Each structure stands twice: as C-alpha cells, then as structure tokens.
Image (cartoon, rainbow, N blue to C red; front, side, top):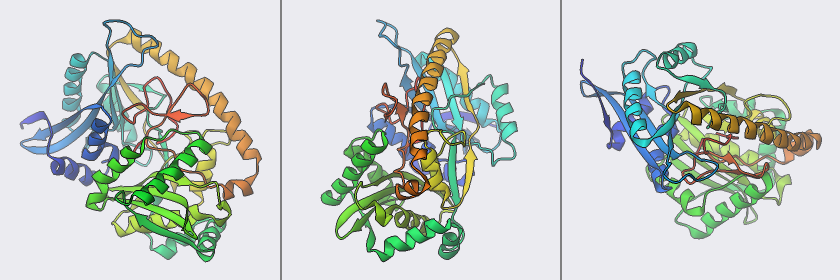
Length: 412
C-alpha cells in the first residue's frame, strides 16, 4: 500500500470525493476554500491518496491568533478545519496521515493549536469511535465551538404535499395565506443590479433588527458566482405589489441543501412572506435532487432564553430534527498561550451569554403570536461576537476569530 499526502488543485477530484461521502460538507468544498481566499485568507487543501485514489481530504484554514495587544516580532497562527477532515472511516489510514501533515504545517505557520470540527454528529452510531480516534491522535475536547454545533435538518425526500402536511398547522396556514394575499416568489440573479440591491438592502434591514454582521455585497455576489453557475445556488426574493419583503440564498452540495442567508423586511410582516418563501426553498432543493435541507444553527442547549431560541422555534415549525455535531477537537502546540487564550474565551462567552439571554427572554415574553408573525432572518455562515453583546460579527475570512463564540452555523 502506498499512501501519500499532497495538495489537491483539481476542483472536480476534490468535490467528487466529498459528495460521495456521507460526511462530506459544504464548508469543506473546493468553492468554500476559494471564498476564503477571496476574503484574504490562506488555505491548504490536503488530500490523502492510496495508490493514486483519494481516500481523505482536509481543507485547512490559517488564521492569525487575536492577541489582546500587539507584540513586536511575535506572529502566531491557529489552524482550523470546519466540518473536516473527511475520511471514509475512523480507522482509515488517511486520518493520521492528514493530521501528521497538518503538524508539519503548524510548525511552519507557528501555530498555537490545530482545531478540527469534523462533520460527525449524534445521528452517527459510531460517533464515540470517531471521538476515540481523535483522542488517540492526541486531541482534546474543547467545549467552545467555532462553528455552531447544533443545526436543524429537514428530510425533504417526501413529495411536496407530504412535506406540507408535516408543517405545524399555523405554518401551513401561513404558507397558503401568503400566496392568497398576493405574495410572489421569484428567482433573481446577481447580474440584475436592481434585484441584487433589493436583496442586499433586505439583508441590511435584518442585520440591524436582529443584530448580526453581514459581509459586503461583493462577497454575496462572489458566492453566487461560484455556485450558481453550476446550478448549485439560487437567490429568491418575495414581493408584494412590486415591493421586496423577504429573500433567501440557498446552496446545494451533494444531496444536501443549506439555507445560507435570509432576510425579511420590517414592512408587511402580516403577509407571512417568510413561510411561503421557505416552502419554495424546499421545492427548489428537491428539484436539485437533495435529500436533506439544513436550516443551519439553532441553540446548542435547547431551552428558552438561549441565543437563537426564536429562530429555533420558527425552524422547528416546518418539521425536522436536531443534529448535534461532535465537540471541537484541539491539538495544542503552545500550551501556555493556549490556556490563557481559552480562559479569555470562557470569560467572554459567559459575559455574552448573560447579555444575550436577557434579550432572548424579553423576546419570549412578547408572546407566541408575535414570534409567529416575526419569522426571524437567518444568521449568516460564520458569525462571531463583537465587543457589543448584541452584535454578531465575523473576521475578514468569514470565520469567527478563535477568541470569540459563534452563534450560528456559507458560512458555518
């Protein structure tokens, strides 16, 4: 047996392997690496080949360590793989080989930690075996995730009518009511400047209302450029009497569809456009051969008062199930810096949680009926906290800095 590790530059070879794997994920796709480079990030695409056949991959991002103060001459990094690496089984020879290559990169990049968040979740009967495999390779569990651990997923293999029947009664009524009242859903492209401006304006409105960061308009256009050209992304806008009132961007990778970005206007919310728009999204994903629709992040702890509780209740109304990813795995190279950094993270997390819990409880107190009227916009791919407890931001690469706590799940 001949096993080699090399950087992969063939898009089709990379994506074909990932889409054949049950644990392949959008955030490991070739395109996602390109998007990180577009935002100024540095990446490694590592592939494990056995006798020339690809048997494992890992998209590795290089990030600067966010030191509290700048120290001249001290430039440290941390390495991160979001929903990776991807190998065929816990005992695959590709896993230790990819990790060994990552160690070499860590030395060159002066890394403090190698942080992995593989796409292994509680729906995998071998989750404990995967955890043991990483533990045997020297990793330790970190309870603080970069990319939100828990997501809401809907099986969309049933036909349209069967899918609709699984919705809560009020959700079904809202879908039909929006259509009856003249809400129209149409597909738009990044080439139509007026439509794309309308989409982005809705995102800005939702960002201000629900306190999360959004990337600039060109980044959203770049996402569509990478995925829509192959029919793997769609941008929908909901209108009423010519006025844009809601929008969604979806991305397909393999047989999964991700609900990437969403927005709703502050006007005409009584028309319930988000519900009809969401149902249309399911239909698009079905037409592209998808089996599962990933709504993305919901609270890790499912109880009122947790951040994104209102978003969770909205998503849950369409049916589906919770999927909890395995804990973050850290391989530590510089334990002193790592320990100080982690303590800072824990402090900031506790402070943020306290502030956000107050906001969520206030929202919950407004009553169930108002929450139904105010279907929340989706949180973008990879937000992080800012110095303000109510605002969520990302760094230049679209990834949360490692000294921040993510609140969601493009992107993740």
